Image (cartoon, rainbow, N blue to C red):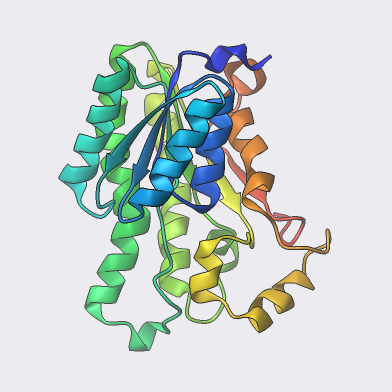
Length: 254
């Protein structure tokens, strides 16, 4: 069924750890050419690339600060140039950058949170869409968050707002790009055990979150992979466009 990914090019931003790494490895195992983007975790990115090659895929590593519009745009173009095409863009790069109440958030913190979560999506899409149009279509999958629906927990308001903007931009891009045969959707993870939460959540906070999840456990990066594959597959989801799919173990049911 998934032979359709063989030879296609997938770029995953923030692919060195967590959800991005799991998704990059999965597409590599399906025979895709995978652009592995990272900012500062080069060793981890090289490990992901090595794993992709081991399972039969091809990998190309690109470095860029996701908050730098021109740098990220060049990274997108580099992947497309290396493999000769770009079929799927997964905008996974993002971070909370700490739990800071709005009244305590500096202007610098505000800008950093919006840049890494929202500006990065703008930058990558702005570079990728013209390439996809030239090749007759493509697939964009953004990563938002359960916080975009709930408003997030204390100190996560700016992150939640940025992710809500990603969800809205996803819907708008789906309308703008449908005529070019480019589908745009998003995955909205819940509480997933990754380095993301290791940086911003205590054991007590994670346990409190677990008790609110009907499936009774926190998610893993691998729990998210199937949704990305589904949305990227023209065989499985060719009539799915502009949708935000929640992957949260039932913690939030819109």
